[in-house]
Length: 522
Image 1 (cartoon, rainbow, N blue to C red):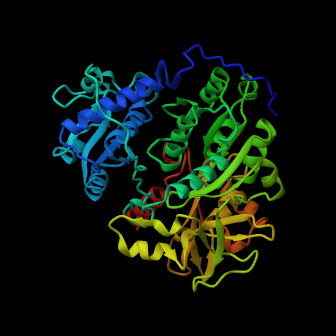
Image 2: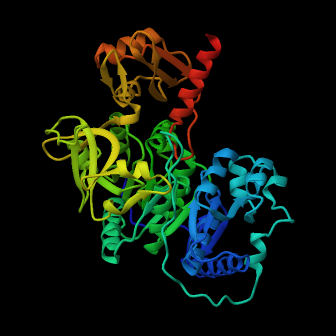
Image 3: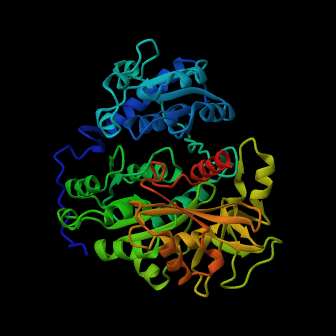
């Protein structure tokens, strides 16, 4: 349990600094000035109001400078997952009709150069703390001199005569688990509705509690970390950028900067809990007031341990890029409804529906559908067919499967697209994963279905461990807790599972690699 102490700001930097990364700091005045300069530079390069600027960046000040530049020139910001291959990035750039690309120098590969050769290119020097975190060679961290350099614009001492205009939210692409990624577009939303959405988000993320001092642990190309980071600055807070998640380093930063707010995912909890006892007790975490997590299911035992360690500062939310905040809960609410993702946030209505659109009974599993002030305005860019399936009878269909209990708390069973039908029976892999993760020695896991001649599909489990777990014992353990037909037929153990910087497992990649291996062996 945390020992609550009075907040004493331990950072030596000027209180006007709103961004910290490694040894670098940036004040609000510097951010606004740099935003004006970059906006001016892009306009001089031929960009016009409404043009899309793609960001292929790790967590850096440049993200926020470009966001601010958009306020002055009405550019459309398109964050891109820098892990994507050149061909995948090419699809996004063409889909959003990008006119410019901002990229960290070490990410500018020969393949990417071919993709962006006809676009305005802004190469940003890769900062030292990022180079260190990712073991980037010094020669790759320096920008190429034959490309229009970001640094040149920032060094320009000429005053920029630009005034803020209406800012459009970034254009985020979904992960594309069911095909090509889709850009989520929001239609015209009245100011009063925007205010209600902001109030709901602030409530879920705890920004009604002051001061707001946070460490951004997740990648800014994802909508939730990006939105969270932006709201920290909007609340006159301090934001420390962690180049890559490191459990002990996070504890150090919490103590050093008297951090009050955090945005996390369950994998980060796992890594924190795995730290030795002497490391966990080494740092003063008493400044924390609101630690929110989402993005992936959190195993109940993991969450219980975090609440025991950090206290009732742990909060949860359920959201989508398409909808924003749907549910939220406090530690006390979760302990009373363990396994749920909370109840509907203010202004949100939730229905559980059958495939035919009829509403399910209490505790009956079905499609999770959501409605609030802006759901009717959501669409997918260049994907009319998918947009038509998105909103039905005023409710947005999330694609998740779950149920509401008698107290209105939502429980998520799985993604509909992840559901496995084996022998004519529906199986939700998340249910199996929640049991697997409780086995001693299992660091992480993922379960998915693959084709099977006899049953149509069968379950395969990939387990991150030291490789010493006995498959028969795992199977026996599961059979004591779930129906036998839900127990995976195949258990694969690996020392490390691939995951995004956000902590999410690359489930699709794991499945594709497994199927590819099976095809070669056949």
